[in-house]
Image (cartoon, rainbow, N blue to C red):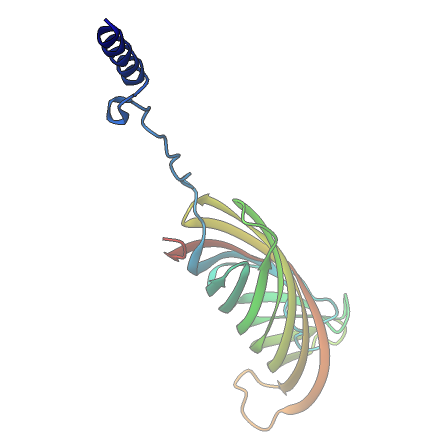
Length: 246
């Protein structure tokens, strides 16, 4: 009888212990969720930028004995190449101006001059962007060289004397600037900037009594500091390429 009771107690203990054992391979867990990397659908980080200068409104160095420096407009006459490194851009640009102009010479009401102005400017510089948004204000400075030539004539209102002029000028430039660029789509932006030019120039003036410009001219030469302003130095259309983070 005791043996039967002992056997029954042993079986009861084994069944209770087996009931507490859970097989690990039968337990189910929910599939872990790994969040996806957020994609930036408007990436504007590119190594290189090429820009076309579509419009400019600016002053140029003094011509002849110009009383005031007028503001002149130009269209599609410049190109810019830029290497972008973080928020710093290293830029190289060239502009060419070529058109007929007229202006007051010596003083207002003294003489009127007219002729062809040609101006070539090459600059290198740096710009610093304020942020990484679609609208990016920036500032910086350029240094460069300007070659300018004017060929025309002037008429004195009092004496009615006409003089045929040639004005050649070379200048070294320092040009601080501010501007902004607005990205329309990731690769394409429009930009606008204003600058202030400080120039040290060499000017050679030749004056002829005859339109044929034969014979020795009346000549003068001068070195001087000049300051001129461009409230809209460049409105540009920009294209960027070479994605940085890819």
